[in-house]
Amino acid sequence: LAVVGAGKMTRLLITHLASRGLEKITIVNRSLGRPQELQEQFPDVDIDIKLMDDLWDVVGRSDIVYTATSSVDYVVDEALLKENGLAGGRPLMLVDIS
Image (cartoon, rainbow, N blue to C red; front, side, top):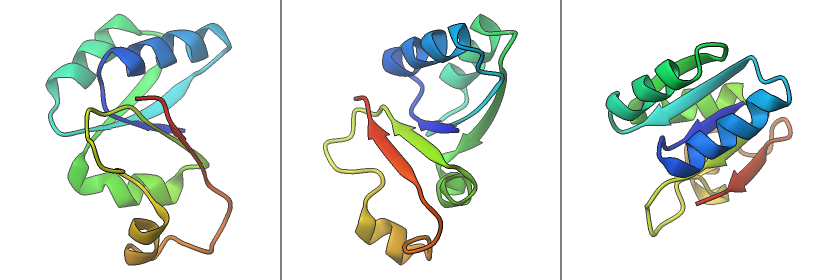
């Protein structure tokens, strides 16, 4: 399970999922500051922080990827999955909660 972005929507997502037993999540973000704040806010959840350079590695290892960014463009789409060698393989659920 992974989420791209570390703002308000990600905090709400982790709050909800933690109440349902979430134990581990990977956060991919442009910087470390906000994800580290989330680590402090959710000490019972194992939060792995990755920077955007690792986005496609994280997507490749995840079954579900939430996106919660301020980007006006798609962060993950079919063309980008193909470009990064990740299309047509195993199932992947993408959920945009921006």
